[in-house]
Length: 139
Image 1 (spheres, rainbow, N blue to C red):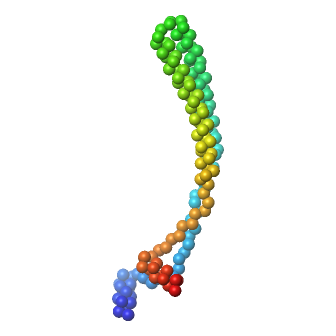
Image 2: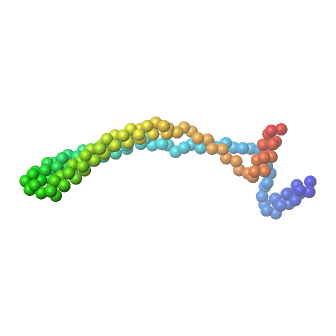
Image 3: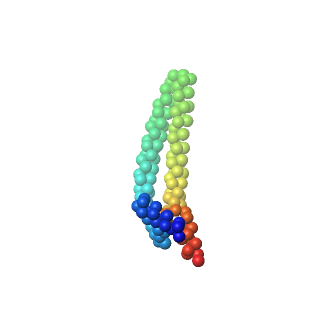
Protein backbone atom coordinates (compact mmCIF):
# COMPACT_ATOMS: atom_id res chain seq x y z
CA UNK A 1 0.00 0.00 0.00
CA UNK A 2 2.88 2.36 0.82
CA UNK A 3 4.34 1.73 -2.62
CA UNK A 4 1.09 2.74 -4.29
CA UNK A 5 1.00 5.92 -2.20
CA UNK A 6 4.57 6.80 -3.19
CA UNK A 7 3.80 6.10 -6.84
CA UNK A 8 0.72 8.34 -6.62
CA UNK A 9 2.74 11.17 -5.04
CA UNK A 10 5.44 10.85 -7.70
CA UNK A 11 2.79 10.91 -10.43
CA UNK A 12 1.34 14.09 -8.96
CA UNK A 13 4.74 15.78 -8.56
CA UNK A 14 5.98 14.84 -12.03
CA UNK A 15 2.54 15.41 -13.57
CA UNK A 16 2.52 12.02 -15.28
CA UNK A 17 0.20 9.07 -15.42
CA UNK A 18 1.75 5.64 -14.88
CA UNK A 19 -1.41 3.57 -14.97
CA UNK A 20 -1.08 0.42 -17.02
CA UNK A 21 -3.43 0.40 -19.94
CA UNK A 22 -4.62 -2.95 -21.12
CA UNK A 23 -5.04 -1.73 -24.68
CA UNK A 24 -2.71 -2.66 -27.47
CA UNK A 25 -3.44 -0.90 -30.72
CA UNK A 26 -2.43 -2.63 -33.92
CA UNK A 27 -1.61 -0.14 -36.62
CA UNK A 28 -1.28 -1.64 -40.08
CA UNK A 29 1.44 0.04 -42.05
CA UNK A 30 0.95 0.31 -45.76
CA UNK A 31 4.04 0.17 -47.87
CA UNK A 32 4.57 2.93 -50.38
CA UNK A 33 3.25 2.15 -53.80
CA UNK A 34 5.77 0.30 -55.90
CA UNK A 35 6.08 2.06 -59.21
CA UNK A 36 6.16 -0.11 -62.26
CA UNK A 37 9.78 -0.09 -63.28
CA UNK A 38 8.95 -2.07 -66.37
CA UNK A 39 8.44 0.96 -68.57
CA UNK A 40 11.67 2.68 -67.52
CA UNK A 41 13.60 -0.58 -67.85
CA UNK A 42 12.30 -1.03 -71.39
CA UNK A 43 13.16 2.58 -72.30
CA UNK A 44 16.67 2.26 -70.88
CA UNK A 45 17.14 -1.05 -72.63
CA UNK A 46 16.08 0.39 -75.99
CA UNK A 47 18.34 3.42 -75.54
CA UNK A 48 21.38 1.35 -74.56
CA UNK A 49 20.73 -1.11 -77.37
CA UNK A 50 20.49 1.66 -79.98
CA UNK A 51 23.74 3.20 -78.73
CA UNK A 52 25.55 -0.12 -78.80
CA UNK A 53 24.30 -0.85 -82.33
CA UNK A 54 25.50 2.59 -83.42
CA UNK A 55 28.92 1.98 -81.87
CA UNK A 56 29.25 -1.38 -83.59
CA UNK A 57 28.31 0.09 -86.98
CA UNK A 58 30.74 3.01 -86.60
CA UNK A 59 33.40 0.59 -85.43
CA UNK A 60 32.92 -1.55 -88.52
CA UNK A 61 33.27 1.54 -90.75
CA UNK A 62 36.42 2.51 -88.86
CA UNK A 63 37.81 -1.04 -89.24
CA UNK A 64 37.32 -0.89 -93.01
CA UNK A 65 39.10 2.48 -93.14
CA UNK A 66 42.04 1.47 -90.95
CA UNK A 67 42.47 -1.80 -92.88
CA UNK A 68 42.68 0.21 -96.14
CA UNK A 69 45.31 2.45 -94.53
CA UNK A 70 47.21 -0.57 -93.20
CA UNK A 71 47.24 -2.24 -96.63
CA UNK A 72 48.43 0.90 -98.40
CA UNK A 73 51.12 1.87 -95.91
CA UNK A 74 52.01 -1.62 -94.66
CA UNK A 75 52.93 0.10 -91.40
CA UNK A 76 52.92 -2.14 -88.29
CA UNK A 77 51.24 0.56 -86.17
CA UNK A 78 48.29 0.70 -88.57
CA UNK A 79 47.81 -3.06 -88.20
CA UNK A 80 48.09 -2.74 -84.43
CA UNK A 81 45.37 -0.05 -84.39
CA UNK A 82 43.20 -2.23 -86.64
CA UNK A 83 43.61 -5.14 -84.22
CA UNK A 84 42.68 -2.96 -81.23
CA UNK A 85 39.66 -1.63 -83.10
CA UNK A 86 38.54 -5.17 -83.95
CA UNK A 87 38.78 -6.11 -80.27
CA UNK A 88 36.82 -3.01 -79.23
CA UNK A 89 34.01 -3.73 -81.70
CA UNK A 90 33.88 -7.36 -80.56
CA UNK A 91 33.65 -6.22 -76.92
CA UNK A 92 30.82 -3.85 -77.81
CA UNK A 93 28.93 -6.65 -79.57
CA UNK A 94 29.44 -8.78 -76.46
CA UNK A 95 27.97 -5.97 -74.35
CA UNK A 96 24.79 -6.31 -76.41
CA UNK A 97 24.50 -9.91 -75.24
CA UNK A 98 25.23 -8.88 -71.64
CA UNK A 99 22.49 -6.28 -71.91
CA UNK A 100 20.00 -8.99 -72.90
CA UNK A 101 21.08 -11.12 -69.95
CA UNK A 102 20.76 -8.23 -67.51
CA UNK A 103 17.28 -7.36 -68.73
CA UNK A 104 16.16 -10.95 -68.20
CA UNK A 105 17.64 -10.89 -64.67
CA UNK A 106 15.81 -7.65 -63.88
CA UNK A 107 12.53 -9.13 -65.06
CA UNK A 108 13.09 -12.18 -62.84
CA UNK A 109 13.89 -9.95 -59.86
CA UNK A 110 10.70 -7.95 -60.38
CA UNK A 111 8.65 -11.15 -60.32
CA UNK A 112 10.35 -12.32 -57.13
CA UNK A 113 10.18 -9.03 -55.24
CA UNK A 114 6.42 -8.45 -55.38
CA UNK A 115 5.51 -7.23 -51.91
CA UNK A 116 2.18 -7.60 -50.13
CA UNK A 117 0.84 -5.71 -47.11
CA UNK A 118 3.09 -5.52 -44.09
CA UNK A 119 1.69 -5.17 -40.57
CA UNK A 120 3.73 -3.50 -37.88
CA UNK A 121 2.60 -3.75 -34.27
CA UNK A 122 3.44 -0.94 -31.91
CA UNK A 123 3.48 -1.14 -28.12
CA UNK A 124 4.07 1.97 -26.07
CA UNK A 125 5.13 1.23 -22.52
CA UNK A 126 7.84 -0.34 -20.43
CA UNK A 127 8.90 -3.95 -20.36
CA UNK A 128 7.51 -4.46 -16.87
CA UNK A 129 4.13 -3.09 -17.98
CA UNK A 130 4.11 -5.48 -20.92
CA UNK A 131 4.98 -8.42 -18.67
CA UNK A 132 2.18 -7.50 -16.25
CA UNK A 133 -0.26 -7.21 -19.15
CA UNK A 134 0.78 -10.57 -20.60
CA UNK A 135 0.61 -12.22 -17.18
CA UNK A 136 -2.85 -10.77 -16.62
CA UNK A 137 -4.05 -12.08 -19.99
CA UNK A 138 -2.52 -15.48 -19.33
CA UNK A 139 -4.47 -15.89 -16.08
